[in-house]
Image 1 (cartoon, rainbow, N blue to C red):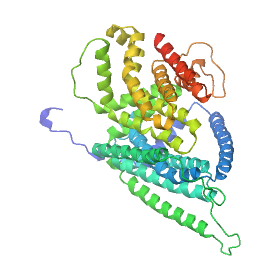
Image 2: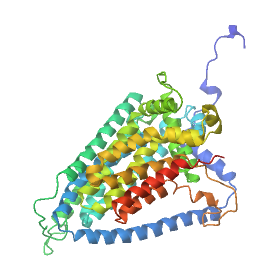
Image 3: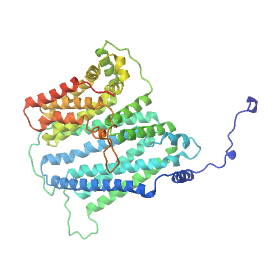
Image 4: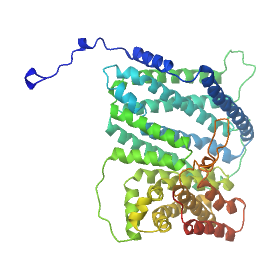
Length: 518
C-alpha cells in the first residue's frame, strides 16, 4: 500500500463479531483437551496423592492443635490473660501488612506473558478474562486468613465459638485488604502509599510486643476464674433455640458476609482498569517463584523477588565510590542496601518476635525465636554475596579470592546483625546468648547465600512424587543448620564459656573455608 492510499482503518466487519470471554475460554479448554497426552486416571492419581497428603497433614496437625488448645485452656495465670489481650493487636496488623505486601508483589491479579500477549491484547472483555485469577486470589486470602486465625486463637486456649468468630472477622478483614490491593494495582502512586501503610502496620504490631516485654512481671499472679482464658458463661437451661453467644456469632457472620460480598463484587467491576504491564509482571514473578520452589532453593526465591524489584525500579542515581580494594566494596555494599530501605524496616520490625515471646513468659524460647527472626531479617542483605558466589566471571573481574570476597561482602550484614542483636538484648536477657544469636543469624545467612546451586548429578532417589535428585534434600537446610548449631549451647543451658566459644568457632570456620563454585 502506498502513502497515497491513506492510513489503515480497522473495520470489525472484516473479522466478524468479537467473541465473548466465555466462548474464548471454552475454545481454549477444548483445544487443550484435544491435545492432552495424559488420561483422566493418570491425572486422578496425582490429584489423589495430593489430597491424601493434605488430609493426613490436616488430621495430624488438627490433633496436635486440639491438644495444645486443651493445655492452654487450663492456663489461669495473669501472663496468659495479658497474652490473650494483646495478641489480636499484634496478629491482626501483622496479617494485614503481610497480605498487602505479598499481594502487591504478585499483582495481586496476574497473568502469564503468553496470556498477556494473546488474550489481553485482543478486544475481548478484559474484565472477564481476569476474573478467574481475581476469584482465586480472594479464595486463597480468605482460606489463609481463616487458617492463621484458627491456629493463633486455638493456641491461646479459646473455645470453639471464639475461634470461629475470630476466624470470620480475620478472614473478612484480609479479603477487604485483598480488594484494596486490586484497586491499588491500577496506579503506581497508590502502590507506593499502600506499601508505606503496610510498614506502619508492622510498627503498630511491634508496639504491643515491646510493651509486653518491658512492662515487667504483673504485680500479682492472680488466677482467672472460669474454664480457661475465653470462658463464656452459658446457661444450659435456657429455653431459647439460640443462646446470646450463638446469636452474636450469627449476626457477626452475616454482617461480614454482606460487606465482603458487596466489596468483592464492586472490585470485580474495576478489573478492566488493570494494565497489561502490571498483570504480566505478577505472572512472571509467580513463574520464577514456581521454578525456584521446584528446586527447593530458598536463595533463588530471594533472587527472583530482588530481581523483580530492581527491574521495576529501572534506574537509580549513581554515586562515586570511595577507597580501594575491600574498603571500596564495603562502601558499595552499604549504598546498595540503603537503596532498598524497606528491607531494613522489615528487618527491624522483626524485633517484635523475641519481645513477643519474652512477653508471654516463655523465656526458654526467646533465643531460638530471636535467632530465626534475625536470620530472616539479615538474609535479604546478602544479595551482593549471592551474586559473587554464583558468578565466576565476577570473581575474576574483582581480582580477589572468593574467600576474601565472602568476608568483605559480609561486613555490612554483620554490622546489621550486631545492631539487631543489641536491640534484642533486653528480651534475650543474656550477653552471651545475644552473641550466639548474632553469630547464628550471620553464619547461617552467609552459608545460605554462598551455597552452590543444587546438584542434579548422581543417582535419583525414588519417592511418591517421582524421582528426586539427592542434592535437593540438603538445599532447604543450608543456613539453618549453622543457626541451630550456634544456638545449641543456649538451648542446652551450657555455661557462658561454651555459649561464646561454639558460635565463635562456627564463625571462624565459616570464613576460613573457601566456598565452592561450579
